[in-house]
Length: 158
View 1 (cartoon, helix red, strand yellow):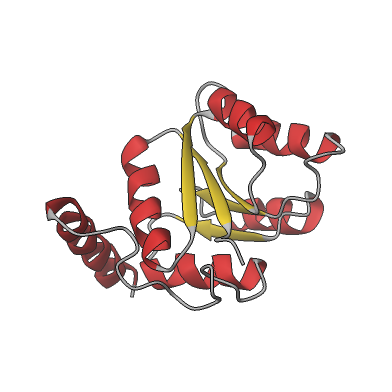
View 2 (view 1 turned 120 degrees about the horizontal axis):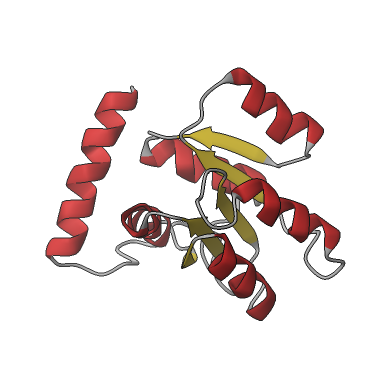
């Protein structure tokens, strides 16, 4: 079985990289797109198994990306997890219940929360063999820094 592909549409490249490190360590393939315009292009070029979508972006916001996704016959079945700094309960209600998003997580979030949401939406399947991949992203200082940042974020969210 092939790795599950996740597209992360986000206006902060450092957030895309953090999500990439977290999910690739769990065996997912992650592609990033900076902003809504690039995200829509990436959706059409190579549709993912799951979309992580920031709602607050300056060029084309996440709500518009979501609207276009659901209006496109070829893309409307892709599950969506909204990832945003907006934590007001009305956004959760709008996103999940009215718009029909599959899940909603707010920044800051811990690595476990992100992985749990992705696995829940994808039915518990993570990597190519259904099990988390050890060291899927590789090694080096970049991973060490990302892990340190993730631990700091997780400590703040707990």
